[in-house]
Picture (cartoon, rainbow, N blue to C red):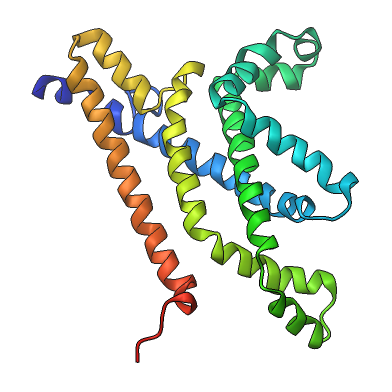
Length: 237
């Protein structure tokens, strides 16, 4: 166990001597995919709640497909499926993009978490108290101004506890990155296991690292909830 830690602690945390690996790659995958998914999900959630089916329909179809199929299959389609198409290989930018396992992994993760987050935020927007909208209209706010200053901020605050679960689930989903040869925590654990045959120790270290990251994320979201959801806490008399 001590020898394994001595030989692989750098690879588990940030580098194998040549490339960035382990925790650094896992956090990179999580932050970039969740960041992209969050930014895309807000306008998509607004479109999702539109009464116009020509507007909401395509968004519903997108979220239905990505929530209805396993992330592992989506990753394989982006990493091996799309690159096998002749039209992709014939265009240099597409060929360069889909040849990279990191690019394919980030694309699959971002689109997947975006689909779940879109539905989450759409539900929060629909649950916005009607009184808040009426008050905004009474102040003379336009529909766009009401959406930007009242509805979306209120929905994002109320969706925060559920969104924290999505981020944790996305962290766990990053364990699929090794499929595309991305050297995340699990990939390093598999390499260590192959070299030393210390399966319990290698995967145990990986489990502890994921546990530490999860607890850190939970703590950060709890602080955010205390700040932005304080108005929902019961008042003490």
